[in-house]
Length: 149
Image (cartoon, rainbow, N blue to C red; front, side):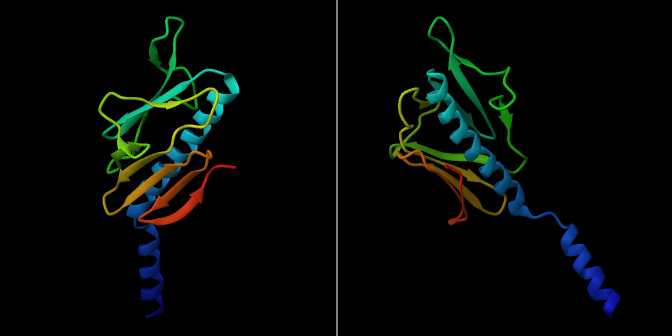
């Protein structure tokens, strides 16, 4: 009987947590978005974010004023989310971000408020930025992380 209980606990511990991928991807995105805002202000150059389905990228303006994808940066490289995690609704100042539009991070002020929803296999997560610069991460409606300092 004792062996059965121990074996049962071991099997539960080895089973993958379906919320783990959603949690990790949501928290990663929240931290990256906080950092891209800080980088824009520190460098004095605007940056942008764009996402679709299960991937996202960061962009900067080149010498000609065109937005180009950042490929050569360890932190702001293009990313594909874990299988089963996808971007859902994206709103900026309460309005849906249309396909192809960029979420801009100003070099001179905090980003406008935005909400990015992620969908997982069994739940959802939200990354919310306020005009104060606070970035909040929630998983299934429970605030887990405030990533802003």
